[in-house]
Image 1: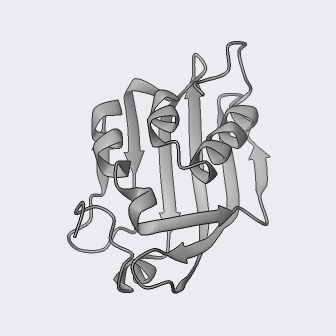
Image 2: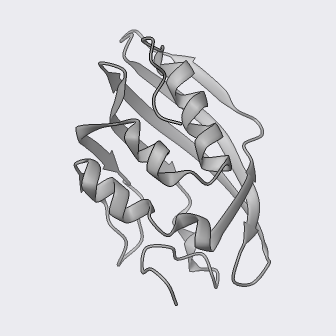
Length: 144
């Protein structure tokens, strides 16, 4: 499933993106991005990317995500509109399990998301960098 055919609001597009992540459909999730989309991680720990410029960089970063983190739900989702109609602020939790160890995964996120022409153009992701230190949480290095 790709981006909705009708112009979606940033909130609708974001909710759609979460459904794709739960379906583990990373190619469709990446299709929601603008070619020049920018993903940023201000709190990324040492060795993790802080900035991904372009759709291809986002695709490479997310490619192995479902092999390492099995997302099951996004409870506590709150989407806040801003004075900029193309930008939303999202609060949520991602819950599931770490595939390698079976340990629970429970991460709280705050994201600032900008949508341009129906595509994700900017995604500033604030998450707890300590959580990726757990065995099995590092999905950026491909298959083990």
